Length: 239
Image (cartoon, rainbow, N blue to C red; front, side):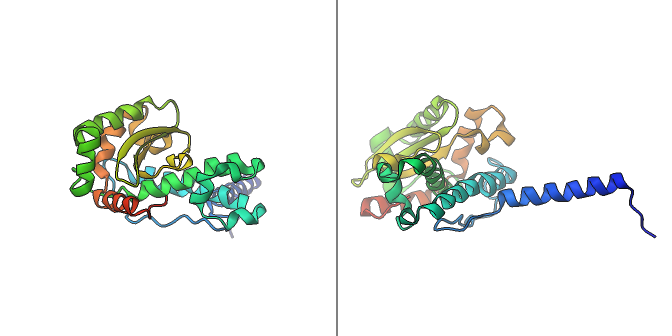
């Protein structure tokens, strides 16, 4: 006959409770207008530059938390829930002050990461076509863009992002933002960008942010960047 002593029963019960709490913590809830879209490629697609475990934690926990928090606000703000995320981020002053910081942080995080997953999963290399021409014109060449982009990423103190913005006329510019702020909040559009929060690279690179910034170019999907560039010039690019 199977028997269990009191200590084993207590430990077993504690493990079940802990596992349940962890599962609840990362579940996508509450439901709302914002969704965590599936990755368009396997989590291992960016290896060895970005490991699969980092991809899983980054998307399934960090990005999911932004979506959950944003949806949580919307349950109390039905009028906000009717507005597109782009509209909220480009007009934050119209968001009630009581929830403005939450929308700023989590809405920005959702927009930034949605872009981030989209432009990765590629083979790196160099851009072509109109994007290459724009980079040559506005940065003096792809090598110079990489140097300026990586240097800007290193200058971000603490957590933040480095972006290439794109205007309606196709002009490119380099900007950095703290935390989960986004160029959208300044009325700009993001062509591409890299996350320099430690959760984006610490498992593999520890404190070596320069190595991460350099390796990240190996997984850029230039076809997707080109699509975003065309959409920006057509006036249809959102987040």
